[in-house]
Image (cartoon, one colour):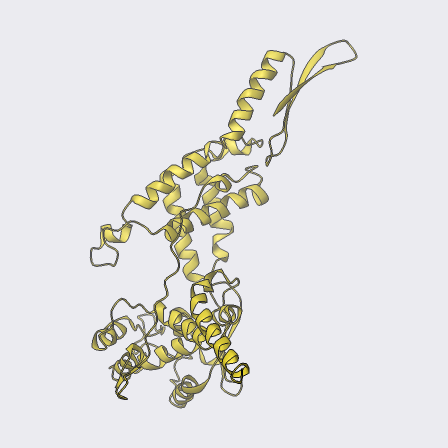
Length: 381
């Protein structure tokens, strides 16, 4: 709300000082010689603040969103981890193409909301350029759109806190899209019929197909994924200096969230790593190197996409992706009594938000524990 104060100087001259206070925004002040000018400024500024168009700093009127994205890409983006850096660079390129010429002072929540909806409705670029890629003709998922909003929000946070180009982050007033509950797809167990016959489940069929694969790496990688919950790129980038067979751990230093994570190696996974250590290659320290060297002599991790898809077909398993091995590991942990906090620690999540999708599996185990406890303590009653 705006207030106007009359002020008289020593020579008797009157000026009008305007102060605008709106909850959630810094106070804005200005002084005018005419009261009509003070009222006009107050009305215009208050309206601009409510619409998200007002920034006290003049920098917002001198720099465009493209300028801000360029500076962020130069100063902040290089510090992001591998795939995250590339993904966010593509997301920022989209914003720059769409509204990069807009002055920061004119980037309003309404404008961002308009392009949020455009982002949601347009076909994903990969489908438009390569019909063979998965997702052809489909719009982006709510989660994907929200990631675009998140990186732009971080750009404006830097503009406010680091660069002094803006006074407020317009993304604070932009509503994110509602995301569906996270996918929980895991390989099913074997089923035992009343007559004792065992029907192989998805996990048994898939592991058998991986074991029979022409790829000598697929089975070990899949077992590691199911045993540790590690991501594909974390497994494929493993190097022997990260493996400590005496302590039975693998140390991941380059994780998605930037923190060091230790993977316990146990049971069959540990046996497979020990066997691989006996025949490790001398020209690379990668656990799973490609057979052929690159033109420049370097060696990259092996590509398991084709062997993986072939094994799925042979095992008659549908709607399953490599990342679902991570979901499977988490699901097995939940069904074997691990708490959500323990699952989050194993998977490397900083919060419990990402593992709440497995809560129903933990609850089923908890219910079983309670039932067994009640049956024991009340059996004589």
